[in-house]
Image (cartoon, rainbow, N blue to C red; front, side, top):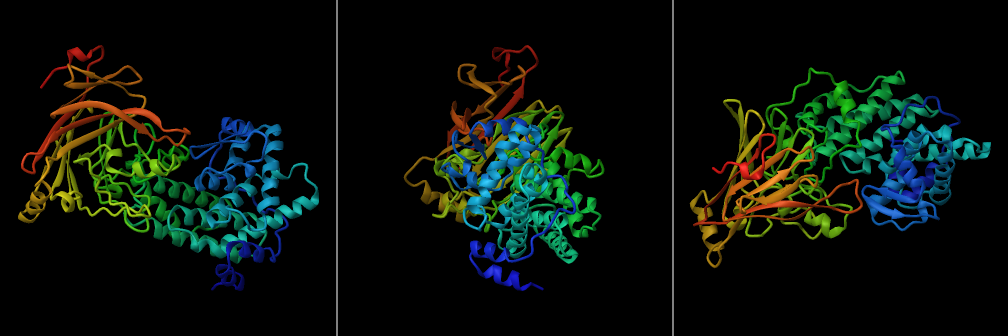
Length: 560
């Protein structure tokens, strides 16, 4: 049952909810202080102290100002700033001089925005900030008079009540889980009635059970979203248990069923496959979480969250083999049916461009289109059907299966995402050798029924349609044309040489971009483009990627 404050707070604008929350009693002290959810980076703290505000890939220089006076490049950068995650980096530096600098950032924020104004008052951001203030309260209060301590605890109470009243308005998925986990953290740490803590723990358990489906997936199909949710849930589970409380059974069960999926979507380097707006996830404690789960959880052999994984020796291929997510996640979905990423050992080789969010609106939209993925493209047209609001509406049925043949793995997939536009179905066959040193592919387009042949006939009445395969390369891979333009040589950072070849009319290297969240600008790289013309609605390109023996040169590559 909702309290009067909860009912009133949800009906008010956020700044008025924050002011109403100020009428409650302030907690007088911390009864417990668990560790923050992630470990910080000392180098990041030193860079921030110099006024180089690189957050979420966005760079702002603020040499002689507090960050609150700096012009925000976008809402994502602003959220990272107002969430106060940067306090974790300061703590990791273990430098009292740095705390003098960053302590004033926090108090300056309280002076400017503590009344509920500004962009930092969404429930998930408030929860993130609340967590950091509590976790680092000792360092934030050093040298401050008692009246400042009273004001600080009053602000903690306001923010805890704000999240309690407004968490349900956050979007399902990462934001709502973060809001509830922050609320649980606050209720465990601050003085207050035990029933508030019990209610927050129960709410988090119910939401965990909802957001992580019974097959361990999340609705956005973003590997990073799944990883962030699992990370927050694992951290909050430990916090509840360390505080001597009993977590909801559904809380631990949600983590347990998500972990096999998370394992399947990680490459040998520990990075996540980058699909549907997801990034590599290197800032998450994934290794610790997966290791803590123990060796009994096996990677599923079917289709974890709609992806298929081929793994042999040091090679791993992860392919998107399900339709893109729909509302409410269509605004982050990518047009990537049957696209894949391929790694050998810790080295990414074939990748997607990644998420362009944070590199400008144009880059954000381009990164979601077919050409930004390692997949088949027809006629230079993109079937992503982005609406004016940027929501992806891609009619597609995607099917795939994996089989084994004498130690090699086969993936056979098909997608209908071009049928409504051209009447053509696409098929992709991939074979990873038993040693992981050779990847072979066959991409085909065809009209499969009388009805789709009519659509194709209309589409091809006045044009010849090219069929193009794109293979985006990781920036650390050095590529060059070889064998008089019949192949592409790929030199890895460790000196290993791979060769790509294709049975196509055109084979070339062209520029590409790799969107790296750790860089303020996209990284320049290359993409292999193989293309041919369709013949009577049918087209096929076969290709291979092979690792050559140590000491080989491009001239020694066999031609088959």
